[in-house]
Length: 258
Ligand SMILES: Nc1ncnc2c1ncn2[C@@H]1O[C@H](COP(=O)(O)OP(=O)(O)O)[C@@H](O)[C@H]1O
Ligand SMILES: [Mg+2]
Image (cartoon, rainbow, N blue to C red):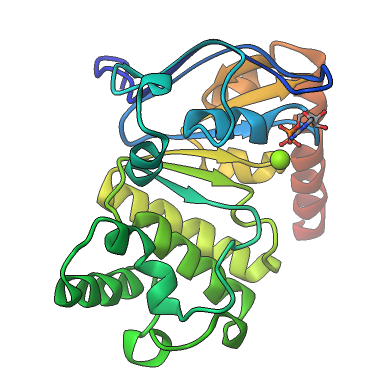
């Protein structure tokens, strides 16, 4: 993986919000094509802020962020956000427009022809396992939570991004749907080959899904590594603490299974 050049490269990235909160302090992170990097850590540690600086929903206060070797601050934020899909916390769908219109926001911005948009919407719905004939004209309020999140993924993938940024994409789902969508997402990613940065406060989710996990605390990355590396060699007490919850749950389930 490290032989290719990174699609995203963050170097000494900082963010101080107005009012003086140092939300992110000197983050270094490379993301390679096709990999899933999880940003994890306790609430308030700077995960969402880090993600938002990548597509310039927030501008960094210092350091550099390169997207395909180009500094993001030199890029048009609108173009940048079309090149990178964005899956928000919750589902982020516009409630007053149909599923098809929600999904086609980027293609319509790109001024694709109507037929091409319609074909793309149906293909995207199939991709996230929703029957286009049933779902394309529904309103978001007529969908379950899992279906809404599927539409959120379809919308983020509409412009064929090579990077997907996701903020707690599964946190609002019930455990069964969550497990299902996590698996389907990994299959979709393997098939389409985009890179993904996923913010999650759930260490178990990070362990299950990520190629690499970055553990943050108070605006800094404490450790980055493969799930196995973190489990075998936690570099910090806080990393061990965060790994303890999924470990304890595993032990309890095994005990029941005896
Ligand atoms: N728009 C904002 N203005 C001021 N402070 C903010 C803003 N957004 C987040 N913060 C602060 O920055 C820190 C990091 O927040 P955030 O990146 O949302 O953390 P996380 O996603 O890990 O929970 C927190 O202390 C939070 O209160
Ligand atoms: Mg957050």
